[in-house]
Length: 268
Image 1 (tube, rainbow, N blue to C red):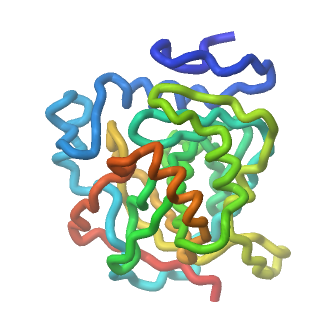
Image 2: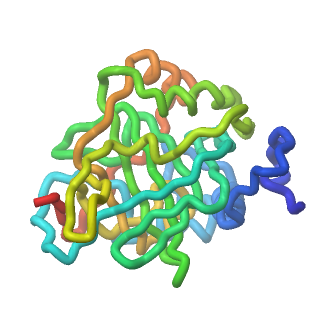
């Protein structure tokens, strides 16, 4: 079986059933060519990161001006598989790597989940408001390889059982990874809102959408972002645990909007 992680990381505990997406390794290897942090520009550190400083469609942005999306803007239907996850402390944020087969349906297109990034505080903001935690689900289309990212924001409130699962397994030290001891369903992270259609009931939620980029090197553009419009909740204890791993913060500063359109998809 091929190595499941870059050579500078320890191998996860042995589990023959865990086979993370091969694109995760490629993307992470590109990101790990050099060390980077959130306090300096990324372009000068590596030629592959030039677009981080020169691109005009960079993420994150502040979602404060938007138009209402038309009926053709699709609803999102996540269909994620339960399984063990690999939780990696990259030194800049937490990454959760899943098994094969977790899918997101966007209209008639199929996107496969590659991994999740956990940022604290949030990358994106809503009308200037920042949030203590943001989960970013990165997907790759099965037809042409294009990227789609779904963001879940968390505000202070009751404890999140899903976030707890991540914190319980997260390594405190950088460049380390741990395989969860039990399986769980990534779909449990999503707020649920059941809406009836002629074809039946589908689970979705209002969202903002815009064209952006990955929020970490190599800052690849042409990423279609979907930011869930209603934040979930996370407890102060959970916020403290995440901030303790990244005392300098684990988020990128806001990027210029450059007149990019932002749409708000409602369910009505």
